[in-house]
Length: 139
Image (tube, helix red, strand yellow):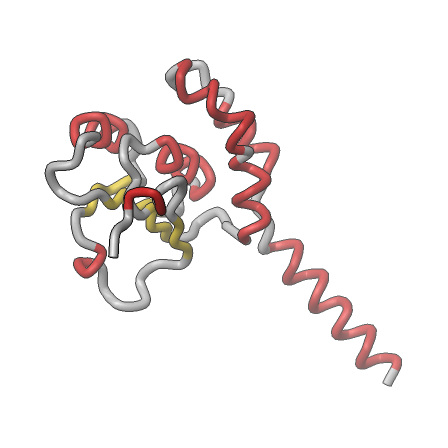
């Protein structure tokens, strides 16, 4: 029994260690001098590294940013996903942020714009989120 508990503890610790977001690397990426000043001003109140770590985001995941607008979170998710991950930046066509979204998506090799979530194949996304959007959704 003791050896089974020891084995389970080792398995848990190993799986937990590999499933963590590198918060320090994400914070460094967000300090990128090329990021717009207006975006950096939002960083402290949004606490994205802590939020994404808490939600279990991992480097290399395929991520869906629902109703991304101009893409503040899309950019952060791009840094977090890393070069081995992918971010789908979803916005409805003709939205107010269409030009800003296109400009932001063009800056990142791992970001692809998407109009309809239904265009994604089943089970193709590891992580999906929407941020600060529920005020815009209507029944």
